[in-house]
Image 1: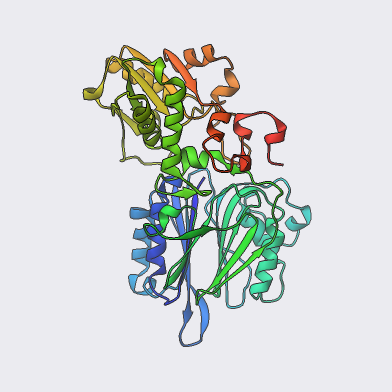
Image 2 (image 1 turned 120 degrees about the horizontal axis):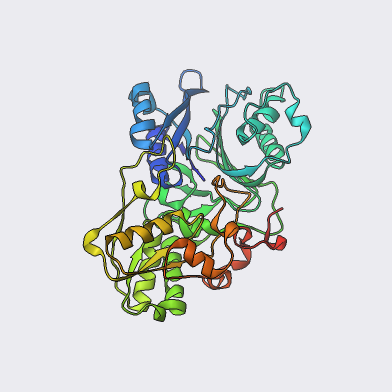
Length: 450
């Protein structure tokens, strides 16, 4: 889904390098590429200027983006006071630079999430600007804000952002950088996470709290809220629009977020361990003599919880390869995962976070059998999911679209037995279950986000 980070450093130093560190902490949200935009105040003129208008790089943050910034000049980067950036997957268009004039120059925009662009009013597309990419929400902001003939003050950008984002449905987190400060906005459903951390010398925005210092006290940007922070760290907030009911994304907790993070007020690692506990309570007695095989990374805490509450020992027979390139295409299970032949047992139960196409689970089951396992079972922390309009989907149909009965699922996945948690079991573990969206698990229109 991608991730964003932004830093306003009160002492006008090192925001680029702080932002790089934050983006690296969010690397799990996108491996395809990253970008960074930064600005500072010129001490001679007391006016803002774009230090690095936009720096983009393929691949990982360290080695890609950081190398380009080093080539651009460390001396300049050390002076920066404002920086924003994002990490993204290949299917998400790189953020674009804003073309409109602001008080002192340009404005930069980065996004994460997967907005629904179908509701953009036609008049916004006919204001003398060309929409280069209809799937890029930054272009929509470019169009609306470019219609402002006057130089924009802070209030103008508040109004422009509000008018633009009101036309965009779906999930997103947005950061806008000007020479005066940083604006942050979050979708009105509260689907895409975005948090704010304030220290003595900086104000930091990030998609997840894992980008903040250990044990830092932080708060979430509210759904439908726009937050502005200037160079002095002064924060101004406006709740522009908000839906009646929040629709938080369950997959953020199950597999997307870093286990070190707290998302929607839920400690991610604790929630995943509780998923494993619930699996143990329901199915732990069905697998006598089995060893637990958690699938890395998000399945590790689920597997730990299942093992702890079922007394089945863990066998780390599936290991993750960390030397993967995501530039050309998404790697398959054979490239991402490796089998540890020394950890193979006769009976093994795979612990997965979710089942999408079934490709990974099916391949792991076959790899375990090829390595010597005689019986292979599968437990999933969520039901096989259906397509969701607010996330990119693979070209191939999902398993739940093709197969309905449990017997067919078991045969399709190549396992001796397959069980999963129902939505009611998952909701019993959440603090505010009524605020979560279940569209991708349920075809009931009442659970959908309009």
